[in-house]
Length: 419
Ligand code: SF4
Image (cartoon, rainbow, N blue to C red; front, side, top):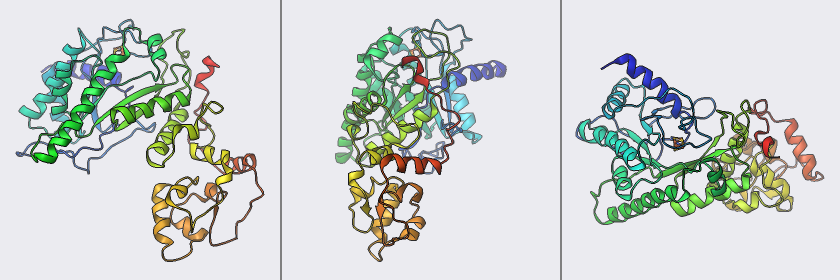
């Protein structure tokens, strides 16, 4: 093996893969069997870089050659960059060697499209198949689904991978047409639909036949680029909701656009990556999935974008002061979850704690409630802090005066191009 060449390929193909953020390795429980290598139990750990990107997996492209020319992608065919391609066995060897050295918990393998969608998908599957069948590897494998790959290949991919993902990339069909004219929206949908249906079929079969093989046990995910086109946060969250609902997505990831070239269709070079916007979208996603909110409560025609200064739950609460104050000792779970500064962990502690005593500010503080926000919206068993004479603007300003944001200095308005 030519180690210098492998190292060179690794540098190129790991660097090209860093723009894909859809690589959380949660949700699978493949156990070690036949004295094999690794497992994906709940103890699998994740490492995240400071900007929130996952680094616990060997995250690489099989190749950065691509026949397509998507404007937002560093790998696109018209970009003058160094190209490389791994052989199938090279990726297998790297994964096994890195796993044995404890550098990684698994593999995240994506690829540019070379020759055709099916040809590329076949090679991705070949890596996963070799790892599972020849190396007896039970660690985590996340394979990218290549848009347009055949149903047969998507079926096979799910037999070896823990998670599959096809990145929708641009949240709207019109945006996709503008920036990725080679791509067809239907080519993304087809593999998603196949994977969704197979996951359901395998789950049903497992209820009857206990030893049914696993099919993509960690489900499927997708990623949307934020800030490359002029979509509003409302557009993005409606699109995400569509994918959660219709394709049983485990996760939708939001990736702030990183300007990589001069193109009149895109934000100019030097425009900052919209990290704060990305974070606010994740917060909204969380509210939709776990806190009982719907998109139209947070974002509507009058408010199509999230407030970058305050979190989306606070944004909603300030527009709906008529629901507040909420009595912590009486409110139901649904309403407790809507109080700014109260997470689901605290909601459960409140429900439990109030069975034994009336809760006051001290109790709430010990339960992890962020009182700097919550105190404006609740009543508890104490009148030490009581001010009901404040309007939304005043509450907002008092909260902002006392808050620090780790993003404060990083954010600039990425969408200035479109204003
Ligand atoms: S098909 Fe994928 S790898 Fe190729 S240019 Fe488009 S986004 Fe990049």
